[in-house]
Length: 251
Image (cartoon, rainbow, N blue to C red):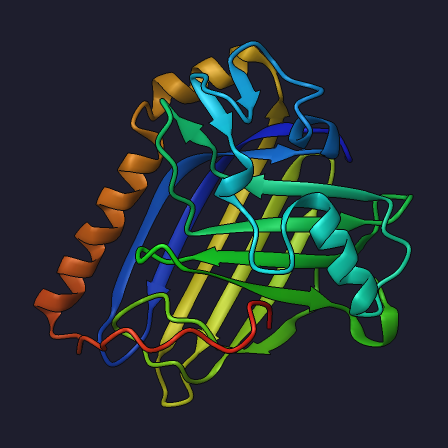
């Protein structure tokens, strides 16, 4: 459970009133352990910190004051979360050197693989980042049925205001990983988002299969984001100007 995986995932979005829009795409993620994030464990097709067909760089992740594994661990301690023994990062890597990741998840696990906390790291298309730190009540673990609420603080879609709240749910086991986010804008609208995937071995064979299935990687993701934004605009969704960044980098 605490080892790395290639994750064959399905990403779905369902936007509610006043403008409805729904879509789902298959995307290949990596679930990386601390050894892989330190460049100590890798298939030949994957590299950390240097070019490869599939790669990840330190600059691809992290929000101010919470960079990398040690930054996430430090933030957890400062937030009152103890018993963190393992850290896993669910992320979309660079294919052919191009990077863009709408959201990644840092899973903080206890010694038995129990989920102690999750940092959702959100990137927008303006090159900005923000983190939402999710933890259980009174130091409890996060179970698959637990829903963690957080006020929305960060601008992602130009078709939503900075208002309302998110509700996060997570599941991580030996075979699957899932993250569900329900956004309520406080005015009857919002968005349901999910990333649900099957864990496969972290091997060259699985990486090659991912490259063959979706060779354009993050470039495809960016193109799909802009395509869906165009669809919303044509349907009449109101465009909002980008507001200033929140005062804190982690909510």
